[in-house]
Length: 624
Image (tube, rainbow, N blue to C red; front, top):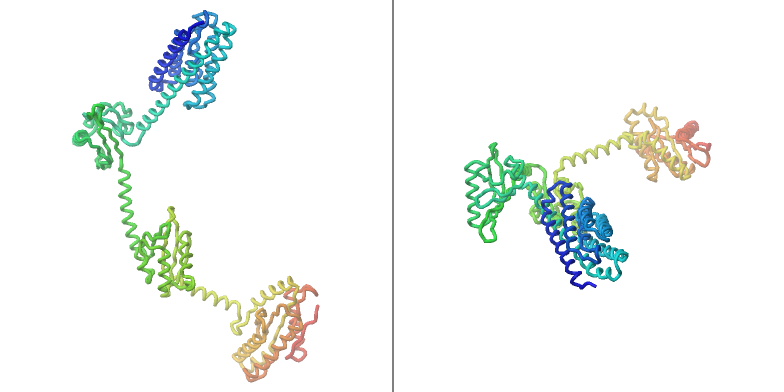
C-alpha cells in the first residue's frame, strides 16, 4: 500500500497545473474575445488540451499502466464554458497522449475523457446561458466527483478493490477543488471581460465627446464621437495628436492654457459653457468638464475630459424664451381670462382679464389662493347669482371639485353679465380655466328662445280666438284616441257651430263678427273645467272640444254648459242674442273600432241634426 504523500503530492501538483492554466486562460480572455469565432475556439481547445496533457505528466500510478490525474476536470470545464469544438480538440490532444503512454488503463482513460466532456456539455445545456452563474459551476464540480466515483467502480475490473479504494478520498476532494477553482476563475474572468467590453462599448459609442490627454496635451484615448467630430473614422488615428493638430492656433492655445491651469491647480473644471465658431462660421455651444489625473506617486499624469454639444439645447432655450415672451404678449392682449390651478386647487397663475371678469372677488384671485376661498368670497359679496344661501360651504366644495373634471358652465353675475367658464385638465392634473364674457351671446340666446316660444305659440294657436288651431286639434285627437284606446277608457268629441253667423257678420260687420267669435271662444274656455280638455277653432265659425276619459252623458252635460254660457255671454258682451248648435259623439273602443275621421263625421252629423231640429240645442250621435 502506498503512503498518503505518494498519492497527495502528485495530485496537488496537478492542482497547481490546473491553477496555472486557469490563470493563462483568464489573462488571455481579452485577447481571445477579439479573435474570430473559429480562431478563438481552436486557441481555447489547444489551451485546454495542453493543460490536460500537463496534468498527465504528474500522475498517480495506481498499478502499472493505470494512472489518475486531473485532466478530466480541465476537459469538463473547457466543454462547459466553450462548447463541443473545444472539447473535441482537448480530447484529441489528451487522448492521443494517453494512448501513446500505453498501459492497461489507456482505453479507460480515453473513455473517462469523453465522459468528462459529455458532463461539461450536459451542464452547459442545462445552464442555457453563455455566462452561467456560480451555481452551475458547483453542479459541474459535483457531477465530476460523481463521475470519478463511477470510474473507480470500473477500475475494480482492472485493479484490486483495495488499490482502487485508495483513490476515492483524494481523487474526489481534488476533483471538486480543481473543477471549482478552474470554473470560478474562468467565470470571474468572463464576467470581468464582459463588464470591460460593456464599459468600452459605452465609452466608445457615447454621444458625448470623451477623451484622455497626457500632461503635454496629447490624446491618449478618444471615443468615436471625438474622432468623427474631427473627421476621423477610427479613434486610434487621433492617438498622439494635440489640439494644435486639430484646430486653429488661437483656439489650440486657448485650450492648452486652460488645461495647463487645471493640471497645475489640480482643480477640476465642471460644466464650463463655451461659444465656439466652427469651420463653417456657425456658432456652436459646448459644455465641458475636465478633471486632472493623478498617478500612484501623486504626480499629475494628464487629464480626462467630457464635452457635450449643447447647441440644440441653447437653440431650444432661446426658442422657449421667445415663446414665453410671445405667450406673455398674447395673454396680455387676449380678451379671455385665463387661470391655472394646481392639482390641489391652488391658483398658480392668472392674467388681468381673469381678475377683471370678477369685480367683487378680484382681490382674492391671486396666486396661492385656494379655489374654495375664492368661491366663498363670491358668495359673501353676492357676486354670482344662484348660490344656495343655506349651504354656501357645501356649494363651494361641490363647485371646487369640478376643477378635476373637464366641463363648461355659464354663470350670471350681479351686474347682469354672463361668463362662460371652460375647464381643461393638463397632463400633470393641473386645471386650466378660460373665462369668456358671453353676455351679448346669452342675451341674444334668451331673445331667440323667447322668439321661438312666441313662434311656437303662434303656430299652435288661432290668432283671433287664442284657442288651439286645426293642426293641433288633429294631432291631439289622434293622440288622445290612441291613448284612450290602449287604456280602454272613453273619449267624446263636441263640434259647435254659431247659429246664423253669416247673417250676423253681414248685418253687424266683420269686426263685430270677430268679437262674436272671441266671445264664443271665451265661453267655451270658461265652461271647460279640466286641463286635459282641449278647445280648438275648427274652421270659420265652427269650434271643437276634445274630452278625454269622458262618456257620452258627460259630454252632453259639458255641451249644454257651453250652449248656455254662449247665450248668456252674448247678451252681456254683444248686446244681442247669439246661439250655437252642438253635436256630440263618443269614441268607445269596446263598441266598435273608430278612426278620428269617422268620429268627426259622427259629431258633425249630430251637429247638423241639432241645426235641423231648430238650432240652439245639443244633439248626440247614435252609437255605431
